[in-house]
Image 1 (cartoon, rainbow, N blue to C red):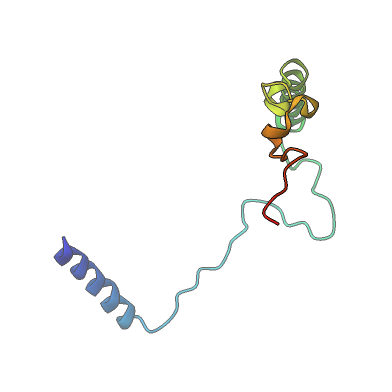
Image 2: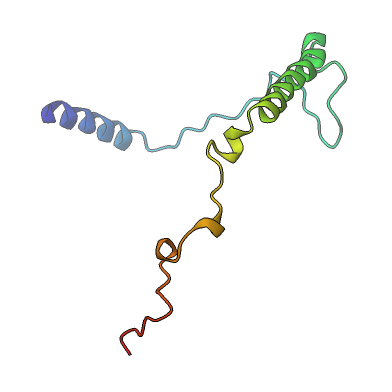
Length: 103
């Protein structure tokens, strides 16, 4: 296994040493129109995208709000919040009133 890695590494290094120039590939934006300081053209997307995107977004927000309303435990937790007034001094780690301490 080490031999195969050494062979692969030697091939990569020898190729890198043989090519003494950096190869750049220009970024091509030929798939869309270029808009500089203006909005996109009106016909940038087909009609099913222009009308379907708000419908899908509305369904998504309906789903989120429905589940927040009917199942709030996902956010607030499943168990009731404990009442700290019912805790004892021992549970809170408070020493008794007649405790003198190490002084």
